[in-house]
Picture 1 (tube, one colour):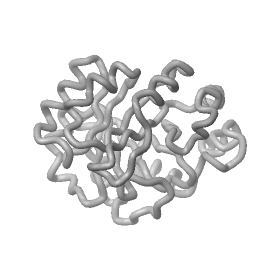
Picture 2 (cartoon, helix red, strand yellow):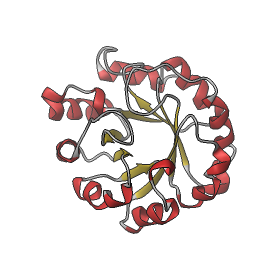
Picture 3 (tube, helix red, strand yellow):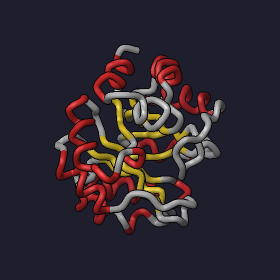
Length: 213
């Protein structure tokens, strides 16, 4: 499984050291949440944070754009060092065009599905998605409760992976117990925050426990 630390939960007073420690512990993808305070009611990481992480690791970085009109931000995020860019269908009028533009830059295109977004409304977009991320909490803040009905979206999307060729990831309240259950249902990767990684002891030990699930 792909283990992706949510860097908004890291110690920003030691971001380089945190990145290097997570890299050495064996994470797969560094997950960066970029919020504009409009699409979601919070402001978190920015381009300088992405650049700092990029300078400290050769591992892939994904940027989850919780912003209005993400097509206008693609070049900025790509130049900061992103390898994967996730966008929300609610934030962009021409989603297929923007997903294609991400691919045209040589990056992987990611599609995010909120708890209140139905899979059937985005199915055509799957043709241009390399990654699909299911939000199992409402986007914008860490530390929320898992929304149980999102499990049905995960099952549905897992059944579509082979047809469309995307990687299925999960973001929100990913505890070890849920990771084990959702991985068995077909989820490939998990964004790790305070439920399974940060605040759970040395990174190497926490990740080893998750790998053993």
